[in-house]
Length: 175
Image 1: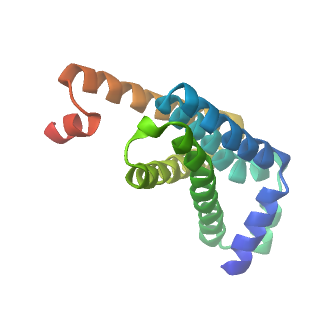
Image 2 (image 1 turned 45 degrees about the vertical axis):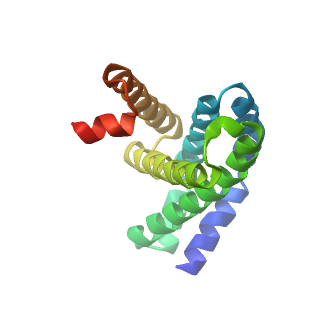
Image 3 (image 1 turned 60 degrees about the horizontal axis):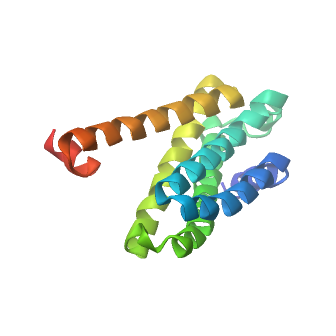
């Protein structure tokens, strides 16, 4: 499994799109936090969705998934290694982007608790985008589907919180 994870990390870090996304997250998340704390979360989740979709999507797009599955015929092991890389990247990119964002926007609440929750959310969003990409096997379609679903859930929670007049988690707890 260690060799599979190392191979997946090598594939990811040699993609130019990964470095562009990482740089975008590191620059735009704190910049968005300066404008609005909520905007920072949206920027970061969009970047993480793209990164998570690129991990399997790039191999499906180029056809190199065949070579990967010939080298390691156990699909579960390959997909687990990919998911571990996606999770690790989401944690590291989330922390590296959110710490400066919290430094810019001190109104964001207690830093450690919010940071932990936001990084956990980044991981969930990344794994969701990863699963969508495995289902549709096309990077652009997966990004648009995952981003639409995540933003729709965010919108529904905001509407529910306005209707109930409370925190969205409180509103969901009362249902």
